[in-house]
Image: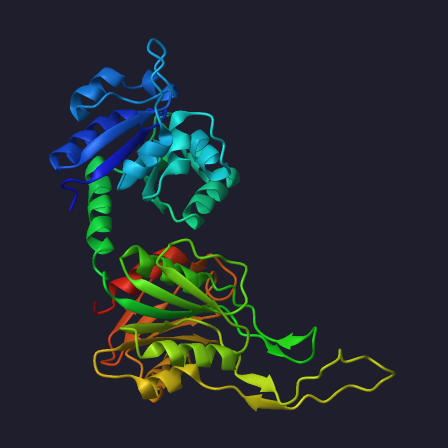
Length: 397
């Protein structure tokens, strides 16, 4: 999948830069055209002459060539590349990337990149575990970058722990799988729901839940990354979709979400219903703010909201896939299987509020995917971005 691809290889100032030579050779051997961009400190670990000899291109380090004044356009590089990989990525460079500190050619190229960016951290174990590094890596992940996690082993400090840059052979496999997956959903249309719904009581109050929408947005980004056209019907969240293949339709109530989903469903190949839809809504919505007076407490009568999954399950045609979510607190598996069958779903993604790190508002999730044949795949606790990758991998596309 790498043949003919344009790859930017960013190299920073860490001892793991010696591995970048092998990574460069493997990329070239796989048929990629590689442009190396190296930080000034990176040149202290590996020479541009070596890198240029292997890549067949002049190595870019500064904004311009000192003796000729030739300008190196980070914008042009960003447009040229099909992918960018920073390996090794030091704590310093990760911090600059996460916070937009554009003081060298590599970071400005990263900020101009229009393609997928891969980041392979490499540093000592204490730096890797420091809260600032952890936060910066999570920020890069939230921007849509793919983090290639470092491994554990003996480090340059002779300590042993997590911080070794992943081996070049494994990095190439990750990039190759990315390009393979990028085409796996080309031409597919996907409907995804995300976030909570708000059911109004009056102009200032509502019935809702704690859903952040992070799981649904991660699913939308992953499907779009693989080439799908995604319609994301989103309840009120503080998130923004990044990929240009995602069309966001903002809604507030369960009825609005149901109507938008029904309108879209006939034209999609699959739907993933990850939104936390409120089960009930007030029978009456007050036009003015409900005032607290004396000891009187208003009685709010509720009605059932429409069941979006069951509605779409009734409309599902041959060849369409319908995937639901179940967030449970007790009898988790039995409740999820009952929903799977009753709502005519193909798969259901179960998570439990009893699992630490799972559920609303977290950056991680721990789920079990169950299909109509009773097959179960239990995933360990992982980032919601990684959960999205695993779920999309299980779809029949």
